[in-house]
Image (cartoon, rainbow, N blue to C red):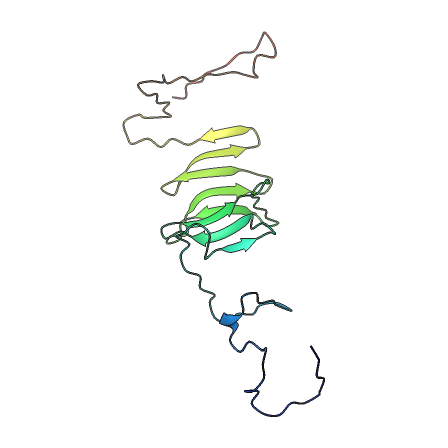
Length: 173
C-alpha cells in the first residue's frame, strides 16, 4: 500500500477504507501507552466457561484474575509460585464488610490466625502461642481424632538430638 503524509486532514473521513471505526470490530487492538479508565470502571463478565472473561498476565496466561459466577479467584497456573510481597508492614486478609482480620502475615515478624475476629494462633520470636479462651467449661486446646484416625499429640524438645532432652509441663494456678 501507499502512505499519505499530511499535517491536516479535512472532511468527515466517511469515504476512507481499511480503517476500523469501532474498537469492538478490532480483534487485536494494541495500546501504544497506558490504558486510562478516565474515572470509569472496567467491567468483565463472569468466567463461567473456564477460559474467557479473565484478566490474564504472562505470555502463557499463567496468572489469571476472574470471577467464576460464585467465587472471586486469583489463579497461578504456571511452574512457579504465587508470591505476595510487601515493603510495608505485611499482608492482611480481612473480612470485607467489617475490615476485621482473618490472618496477618507481618514483615519480619508474626503470623497471626483469627477465628471470628479473635486471635487464636501466632508465631513469635520464641516459637508459637495458641490462644484458647474456652467457653466457660474449662476447655483448652483440643486434638480431635476420627473413627479411623486416633488423636495423637507428640511432644519433642528438639527432635531427639541429645539423650538428655526433656519435655516439661507446667501448671499455672
